[in-house]
Amino acid sequence: MLASMATFAIEGVDSREVTVEVDVRQGLPVFNVVGLPDAAVREARERVRAALLNSELEFPQKRITANLAPADVRKAGPSFDLALAGALLAASDQIPTNELGRCALVGELSLSGALRPVRGAVAMAAGARAAGFERLIVPVENALEASLVGGIEVQGVPDLRSLVELVNGRWTPEPVTEMSAVDAEPVRSLDFCDVRGQSDAKRALEIAAAGGHNVLMVGPPGSGKTMLARRLPGILPPPSFDEALEITRIHSVAGIASGSLIRQRPFRAPHHTISPSGLIGGGSIPRPGEITLAHRGVLFLDELAEFSRVALEALRQPLEGGGVEITRGQRSLSLPAAAMLVGACNPCPCGKPRDNCACDQVARTRYQQRLSGPLLDRIDLICQLEPARPGELISADALERSAAIRERVVAAREGQRARLDGTTATCNAEMDAPLTRVHVRMSARVRARMLEGHATTGMSARGHDRVLRLARTIADLDGRDSVRASDVDEALSYRMSSAWRAAA
Image 1 (cartoon, rainbow, N blue to C red):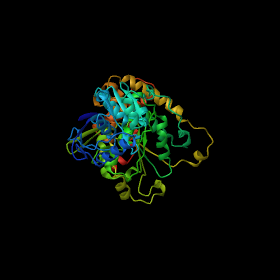
Image 2: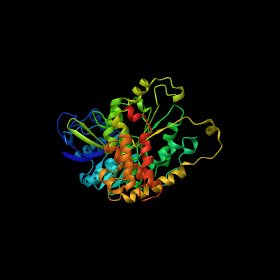
Image 3: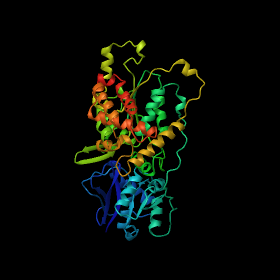
Image 4: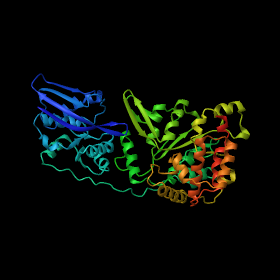
């Protein structure tokens, strides 16, 4: 007898429908799985056999052939176990097939028949809803996560025996509460008031947070670069529900989700030895990289000049387009990558302040040339940090807390959201050239100041637009509708204040 069940496979951060077809007929007892399965899928034969027997269900001693369609797409991971078991039970007349007609099954089986959670429950639920399925059956641990996607009934099942009871109408799972709003973000323990001095860097990070801009901090060790970067998420506005769901889906696919809606913007800080595929994404079975895991949040690259040149150059396209295109063989995947890049590095190989630096100009230039001009051209703010003065370190004066800075950032983002409503951009940094010309009106003084900036810095057309977006953000922080020449002056200072661009 032939039976089929629907399930879903992960592709990038999305899912693809897979039909599991099982044929049971007379012949030598054998269980074959076809349809380009990987080792984990092939080993599902043993898990399904043991799970059926340990759940007091019958495993047919016949010729069993299971096909995973479409057959030309590689299948990876253990999430097909439950659909394989369900189709086998239906093909052997142990459950009625009509009860699972508009239902998709996802889950990994243990040898005892218990269901284990799988990666990508949010993406699979979204795929099931888009494919028109009315119900999705998942392991209990994935039920809350999958229920974040509205428009489809999600049922959590603890084991294979419960699935049989559910299909036969003898058991009903506990309802899963659908989450429809983002709760207030919890208070973070890292606060900007912990950082003494560095008022210029704090100002730069506030502007970056308000407009979603990329920033590079250059300074000697111990000047506070890492402390500042790790406190940046505390001044970012909380994600909207759609953004939180997008973040949760990505982290679910990567297997690092908490099982519920992620209410905070991600902060990723990979080590400088990371490979290009680890940073951008890829692999024989493409997986999201750090730039995608930081989507709608912050990607912090400490010791930026120590990263491999290939990995850094691979960042250029994602920083410009907000996404990553990965092609492996005949497969092409699109991964989101709208993250703020925050870099930190020393001014020279020895890392000491200029007064005590033992490096000659050749060594400093060679070190600075590790960051290419095209990469630096995509960074909106470059700020120089000097060691905090002793008086600042011992001062008992209260410094501004992150909560106060966050209020200004949230107000600026709200203005941008209203102004950019109906476009694909969510903040100033995501505006393209046409949107920049529309929303950054230049007066005669601003035009004159931009011409002076071109003569002084020799900035590119990309740099021109980025300066205007940065000036628009500075005006938003002040609550002004128009951009002034002073805003352009401040924006230009973050491109003119560093020798890194000239060296690169």
